[in-house]
Length: 137
Image (cartoon, rainbow, N blue to C red; front, side, top):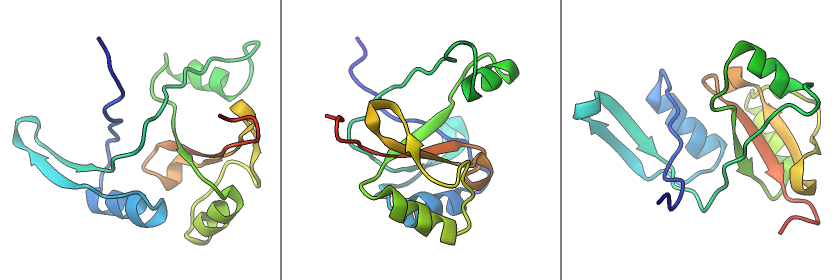
């Protein structure tokens, strides 16, 4: 029986640069690195609180997910980080050189305010920031 989401793995060309991004830029707790000889990989971990798996599919066959599915048969689409001050985080990350897909947050699922960071800014991974709305439990 599946009991939880253990981790999400992101392949990165420069581990030290990626560690700095998640630690310094996104403020996540860095647990440490480990070389795994059997897999010929170097790993770094950032433990997070409980999470959800979100399945996304095009609404009426339209939108960015429809375009994504034209290029790929499916797969990991994005990571979403929670924030308690999305406006401040966007301003801070823009000052660090991050590019966003919109000028300002917009309404997302659960009444949250959301915005996406361009994948070019994060080793090809689309990252969403989400601030809970009034109806989020």
